[in-house]
Image (tube, rainbow, N blue to C red; front, top):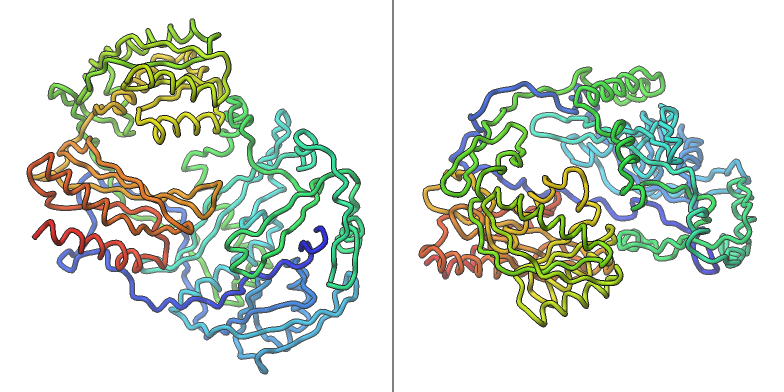
Length: 627
């Protein structure tokens, strides 16, 4: 890191004292209801991706936080420095920051000293008690997870982020210079009656090029990497010397720029306020670029390995569990803490529900399919409610005029089969595909006429252009919009695409494609609410709410409210619910007898706050209306 910027002082995890879980569980079943389990449909035996924890230790454990001075950020080295004192600690479990022991350490805090093998530097280890754990404490399950991760680490898997991947079983996609590493996501948690180990499959895409290859394409050369920075607050060293002396890594490219990782909010809360500086040639790229995602052939090749049939997924999970329980090192660790897992996956009884009956226009009813894909049902049937459509405009690149005209004819024919009439559009061609050009064309159209919808044909998936179009049509000018990729105008399944776009257009101007039978005597109000966090401005977020207004549940009231400091919980939800109830009464002549609210984004530990903050406010606000 440049002077004053910390490559050398990344604070350890676990700096915040463990939170107490002393709040009672939120009841999710009325006292009058014995079971929430339904009865309809055909019973079917299902397998989960969980193994039951059959036996486990129930000893009292003591939890400590461990700090190293000078700081050592390599977990393996931390574990090695502490392992020297195993006779003092007794049986223990250490994940690099948090230490669990079966005996109380004295004195508290306890200071120990170890010599780092690589450079013989004397390291002070400070061990400070944070809490006691007894069986039943949710943090006891955290201890089980630490034991499990230690066992998995003994399988020679590679830790990438927080999950383990099997580099030895990697799949090389030579044509695209990629490697696909299969991996596993594990979690031990307390469920209704048992402690279960959940195992899910994961894949990590490792690109063979480094961050330096990427930077060479997009940035100018810089000599700033040669800047000095302070190490251990006393010695000034270069990056080349630092990596050679500490990690035995030789930096070969002397003209590469630096990557700066700024602290996120959770890093600041954990105590890290300085920047971390990375050397591009030492950083491997992961994931897919936008160009890769748009490469149909690449995505198809990857899906052969990532989208597995349930039987194949089960086989991989069971094989991983066998590998874990037969490994000598892992087996000894599990035995030490008396952990034993069932050999078979948890099975339970599910229900295969009867497909819904789909209600079309004119009272026509068709049977839904078991795969819940209603596309075929819509063909040849009128939509539930087709809105009168009389004026619309289409913005497109001048060179695509012939393809656009052909697509409009296809769209008209496809919509006619749904008994939705699409009139000829107003054509507005533009010379280039810049975001500003699209915005100017939209402004020109709206200033001359009042279209029900504006369709924009775009050449690719550029997010800045899409955002500019939606901002213009949703914020600056209230007009429905439809964005279509140019490649979809001439694809072989253009008729299917045109049918779906016709359905979307009808919905956006106020129509309804279908309905299903909802078994309420009088229409109830169904409300959905979620929070969207702005990816560019971290402290800004917005809460969005929609509420049904009719018995077919196809007409909705919507509202958006701004949040401050990136908060997840909304202060304006109760106000928007009252507004929707008032409009419901205006449309139907009566108040909704029930309100069913789907609230997304409620994490563990925030249920009580949602109940006390949001639900109580809604109750209080509705009290006056329902009196």
